[in-house]
Amino acid sequence: MITVNAAGITNNRGAKHIISKNMLVIITAAMFLFCAGINPNFADSFTLSSLMQECAYMAMLAMGMTFVILTGGIDLSIGAQLGMSTTIVAIVLRDTQLQSVQLSIVLAIVASLLLCLGIGLANGLGVAFLKLPPIVTTLAMTWVAKGIAEVASTGPPIRIATTEFKAFFNFKIGGWVPVTFIFVVVLLILLSYMLKSRRSGREFYAVGSNQYAAFISGTNTKSVLIKAYLINALFAGIAGIFVAAVTGSGTPTFGVNYELYSIAAVVMGGVLLTGGEGKIYLTFFGAIILRLLNRVVIFTGLSSVSGFIEGIIVGSILILVLFINSREKGYSN
Image (tube, rainbow, N blue to C red):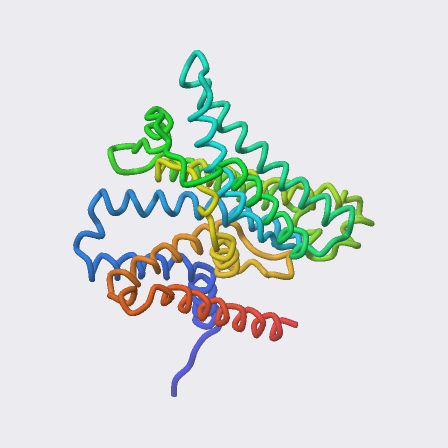
């Protein structure tokens, strides 16, 4: 006769809960090991450094998008904002003749971030005060951001010749860990604490869960919505600065479809598209998984079949994740 005591059942459930809670971390580790196994060069410092640089700007986009989706919204303009950010940085660095290179760099960064914040403010005001659907508002501002970048660039990609700018944002600690990746990790820790432990962070969840209930409980829902879109725009601008430094150029076409990848990372991280639930640190791992998936497609030769294979895989994974989340929510209800 086989018996199972209560402690054994509890331990088993506890183990399943821990595995379920950290599934993305486990998948990230498994994909990393898989990439290292099929490509011996994957683990060298240059390849890992390039991967971390990509993860830095993709994670910035995904973390910003997390705030918007937590409130029940969506932002389709951040890819265009990223392209605009790279363009403005390149133009300012090319055309300004200040007394010091450092002042030119600061001016370029401030100009690009202010323009992105302007787009974010327009998104927030449209959603919060005009009650426009987020998808329509942000789609319209996508064209505005693209238009600004195209008018400003008036032609081909703009080369960034300022070596100090590229050197600063491409600096690698120990020769292989990009400073941009360290910045994102530190920011992630601060944001995780803020969303979990501070009232200002919990308000994003409250608005996404039930905007009316949040309002009658004393939350300034309009302010929260505007802050979400401003944060998203700010992070898109920072991501654009990272990209400009890595590529050494600025062009409006940078960032095409990046809004879709950021949404995919957020959804893979378990943030509900309806808002009110999710953890930003899992969004971070969602972004890493997408970049590792890119390496898997390349290393296995799938990219030679078609350049759209990665998109097909990402789309299929998204459908699967959404299906699983909807089933789990249905069971919980």
